[in-house]
Length: 161
Image 1 (cartoon, rainbow, N blue to C red):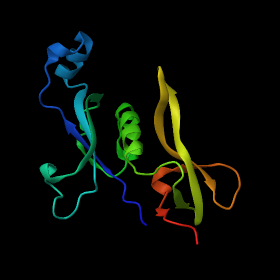
Image 2: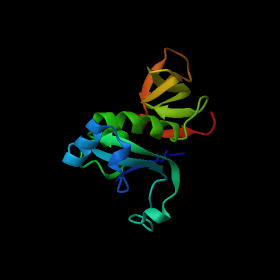
Image 3: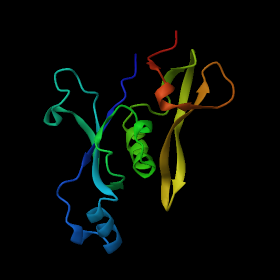
Image 4: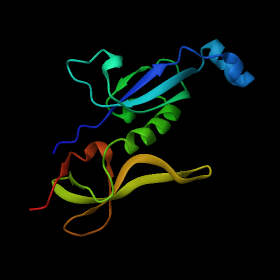
């Protein structure tokens, strides 16, 4: 079964009240040095709903992210996002909505691998950490752990034959 990863919609936030931000942030927003974005993880778009956000299926969303101006777009993968800070948060959201879970079997490098989990890095006081964009896998035939970039997990295996 071919993986159809979710897409990422980054939209410029239009309803911001600069009084809600710290003075330094408000000044940077006012000057156009940073922008405030809402981020949504959406089901892959189809020809029928390509340009109609109201018809998209939303998997997850969160708002109030700072980023460089010009990041508003629809992306097929988080690594396409040029702003490093924004990309960090989007990767985490995207990975948890990718639909790959511990115990799933995937194809990578022409071999079947068992997913042991998402690779996460510690962040502040968060017990789980933030997803890095990689899966921790073990070849089904045995062997050492493999770090697989999510975009290289080409398809899910429904069963071993």
